[in-house]
Length: 400
Ligand code: XIL
Image 1 (tube, rainbow, N blue to C red):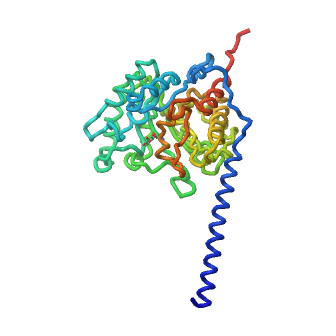
Image 2: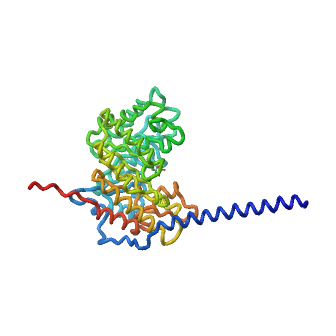
Image 3: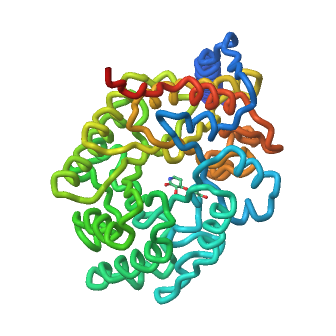
């Protein structure tokens, strides 16, 4: 090997070791920063074993606690179903009322409706005296495989009308609230030159124009005058440039809809949280956003609360950090009296969408929810229980 080659090989080795060293140093710095979120003094002590729904439904506020569920999971897992009934006052079908999902899709073909999963979900709630939400009528995900080659600008309004009249009509009077439109505002739209109004370029926007939102709400109100009508969205929780931009775009959309008389009753705050981002959570920022929404005359539903622990190192700190995120977030959110419900997106780690959507790099079981895979209550259950028990309940005005 020539002298020059040896010298190149040496520099290459030194360079690689330095790079690897800096990667592992950076990883360790990030690990320490995340573990610094832990406060070992927080015990999340709860008094009594009272269920979450009973802690929430306190006189003077009557907040609803619940979860998203899949009909097949509650049918096949009696222990899970029992915990759902025990803890929840209101349920959201995770799949059954979307246009398309892997199991018993609602819209198998352009001319067909399969209501079996949704009917099963309704029957379960009626059997156990629970409320049922509808999720979701207009979304850019979970569209059937036939949609793209079938629905055109000429027939899109007809397909949407047919869907809403059939689905909302079948359950009219039995649905607490409908997520009429889901995720219409695009996160990061300012950063990557999206539309100035922040609207996501969904198939619905492309097919029907910007009026698709108002149209969907008006038709849903006509078909089911009793249901609360909700606009539902995510990515609004943190004191970051991107979340602030999206909060402003959501507020502009809601103001616009209210100004044109769109029949919208509530905003759905999905609240899919990330434990590793908790340093960017500022209670005052969340409360200001919720207050701005309430000032539009809208109720607020926390619709899909969960806390991904994907970036949290294994160890005793993990559940404590996730629990602190739940308690800090709900302590802030529940100060807003316009908040009428809190739902987690699932109840047990055994059935969380995050196992698939936010798996851990160490391949260990994710632990984002309130019960573990054996349905035992976790610290995050305690955290939610504490926040519900401690929430502000407006004292009724006493005439002197
Ligand atoms: C998710 C479900 O949990 C998954 O099982 C499915 O594969 C994709 O959709 N925001 C929403 C929910 O409004 O409908 C999504 O649910 C999660 C993000």
